[in-house]
Length: 319
Image (cartoon, rainbow, N blue to C red; front, top):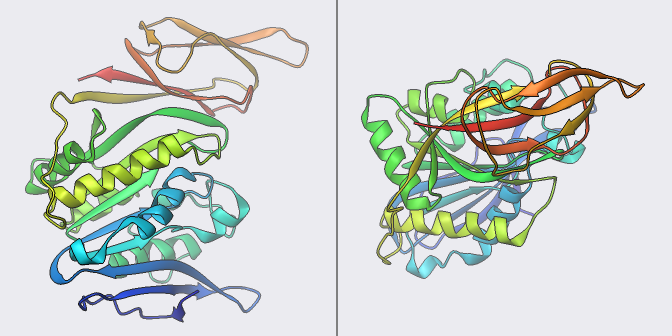
């Protein structure tokens, strides 16, 4: 199970391998919210790679990938340190929800957090300023939640600085051909890290609350490729030869009701194309959903019942 610690030792020691639970804060019932971490050190010091999953409690492909990375990494072939965080947001993971039920906050909208804030803000602060503080690179593994699915893509912060070049190179090494250059977005982990001078990439895969082996294995393979890129293992790195760059355009339901979809994941769509319609309880059509631009449907909510403002689809537009 590992020790429960308020101040974990994250220093490199040759062949160190240790599991710990790091305390976030005391809770109302007298128990302590913790975050599980595993540190794996190789024979020689070197880069520090952090792989984090479970930022949203209903995105599980990354969680399983981190678990399998723990079983895959060979310390005898490793230079440097890998810090694994399988479940960053334990309260959300337990409740199987995107948001933390203790304060109803989305953890990936409150980074870098505050040391005296709500549970999510304290968790975000601990993650950024303790667990990730000395990272050479951070890989954050996400997916669609329990109600939708998406095609794999990789995000990096697109700013005119060395952080951009380092993050972009890591994204190319990971192996997903579809890349999303993002501006600085308040509250998002990779933005908070960029502002701290730490390169980071964020992957998306899967959904529907599943752990499809074909998906989490792609995540495991991608992290191993990143380790090659960082020269943490001796195998030569391989990079995506023909990356495709896209902008992200979320489509939100204009009203609540039953959403009858008229598209499939991966479809090419044209600007203004009708993608579906909304029905009230009597089956009467009350509104439509249309494509905001030309592009490819990269994600969609599979649940037919929607609330006003729910994200029902995502269109990738070529950059």
